[in-house]
Amino acid sequence: MSNLSGVSNAVNDPNEQFDYFYKIIVIGDEYVGKTNFLLRISKNYYDPNPKTTYGVEFEFKTVPLPDSNQKVKA
Image (cartoon, rainbow, N blue to C red; front, top):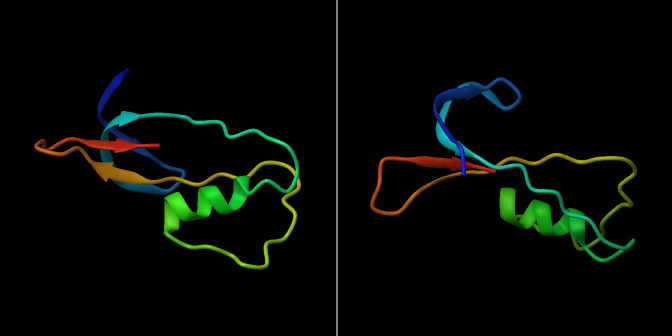
């Protein structure tokens, strides 16, 4: 686990600060719900009529660590 204290991310919000950053790759067969899984985790949204995703999709979520002033972005 790398500590990126004070690093900002220009992709989402250039002013957002976080302490840890993880890149997670979700792979699987077609039509198993990878995109809906990402949407549920990142935006708490579920699409009952999803469209096929072609290529790559990126989502980000930043959460505070319990009992700490640190944040994790994945």
